[in-house]
Image 1 (cartoon, one colour):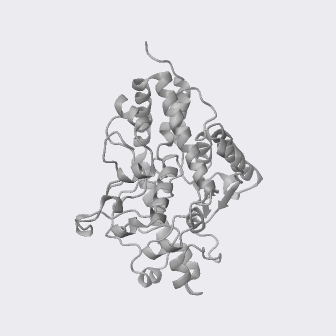
Image 2 (tube, helix red, strand yellow):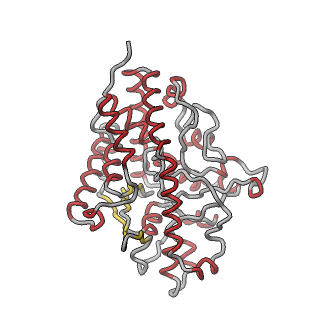
Image 3 (cartoon, one colour):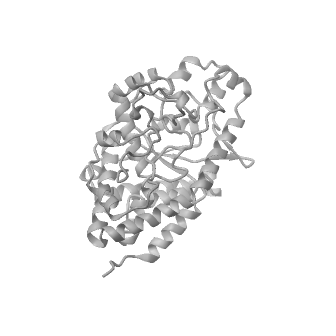
Length: 379
């Protein structure tokens, strides 16, 4: 007997996901009026309310409303996606207990959802639903990758050539890496939410995320446990990376606070709204506890749809043979983002998603130079 599930709800979810126009806010959201502010706050309340059923620690803690940013620069540094240079890590803000509580609750919600699907629908049916969800995500991957690149190019075009010449390490056109960001696949969000929809769950912690994406904004997570929302700012139809160039440099922008003069302050903010296309850590950097902790924290939130915005990942790695030493450890080349598997989902692979260890060490061990996973069953 084939397990029954809510097919209409599943189809409706896939239709919504396919039609989302990333980072294109409607008129109300663009103006950030009272309705838009209330909408954001309501969705965040729904998110944490749902999570509280999976974690007593979430129910006991008070998570405030959103910190809303119109500037990519402010969103980047407020989240905690820092540095390019190794010495930036000496000034990292530690991941707060609130942030750890939040992401562990999301992990528990993920585990519970996967386990409930296996118990209710069986591994074969659950795997078929997951594969359908992945197919929907793959179906829009090319379009979103193009949108990602176009967005980055539009941002770069607004940075004066003199800035590029002054800081020649930025914007190397020879580096052409494929990126996997929240703009493209949203981690495992579509997988977890599709199983919730199939099971008839209408109150999942992931459901509010698609509501926010549909309004053209990006939900992000900060190292201090704050829910950050990036609302793009458009002027005459063009995205403005940093509509407040006179704003203060972030305390975490270590390079900027040392190098940006009064004359270059605004341009520095603008051209540091996103990261370079290529950079890798030296192996010794991975011995730093702060680096390991930040990697695991970012990776875990990325699985739940809070992945960084285009090129906001800590390092989008240039892994061409001429740039990578043969003794570079695979962990030093991780892109920090969980990527979706390329092979079809099977019952055995679905079971492995539930049964494999989900420790920080296991996540790090499964990282490879391409940001993929070593074992086909792992994510």
